[in-house]
Length: 286
Image (cartoon, rainbow, N blue to C red; front, top):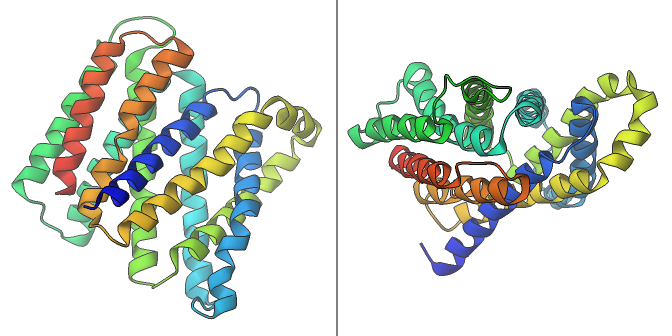
């Protein structure tokens, strides 16, 4: 992999960790927060996403519509599950668990649904990911408000949604031949529309929610699409098997940010666990 491509992927990893960290700063209603940053991201992406349509390289078709609709539903479930986990538990637990279980569950789904047969090193990688998650969580049975086992469960639930949208988005881009930027712009637009009725039920809180969370909303709206666009750019010149694990270095960055900004404890253990999860993801990708 060329140094420039490595730099792009590492910037994407930092961008991903940054927007997840800013999500932790959210105050107030979860649905309004997710709806607001989704709307903002959709507006920012429209000029980029519409360009292939104007150029004629991406036709407006039923495949584009159907693919974007399913992706919007899956991404809405992912966003709400992720944010609910952050509302209740430590970023340093939920984030690495979610990012670690996503690739493992994707691999298991590919085995069960698509008949794929992973290599031995990929299976070992999945076991390593689980071991890393156990280290990140620490003693899962200790008592207290922030029970680590519950945090692991929320992270695993988020990982399941990551696996679902990863499989579908991969199918849409490869088998349905959708232009990635246009496809995901459509998904962002539809996701915002999907959440609008629920947001309108809370219309009296919208202004307060946006004013209170203006910085997190704008940060997520900018850095979330940026992280994905950078990864797509890297994948044009480098194998996915190399880009994917390098991208997940964000879990180490996220653990550091959780310690520095939210004063979460057990930094050394969580960094070690996150690094083990990263190594497992690399093995799964290979």
